[in-house]
Image (cartoon, rainbow, N blue to C red; front, side, top):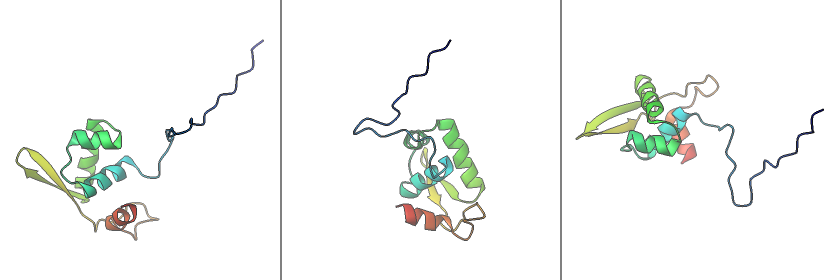
Length: 107
């Protein structure tokens, strides 16, 4: 005979933030927004801000460059990124909006 499971309190304590199980934006969106605000962030800084690995950050930047949403410029030993605000949002429901609209809405 098994014992009934004890109920657990999953609500955060006062002053604590709950860790979300999902978010409204993808990691691609987070990287894009970070670079729109600060185009000279390093991969390490971006990864830390978004909460993903450096390798995932590099892959996302490559996707965004390939899609025409970012350009990369070498400045000395570092990279600087520029967001293309005219790039269309990729999902058919939002395709009539561009990246600039998203950035403006979330600033």
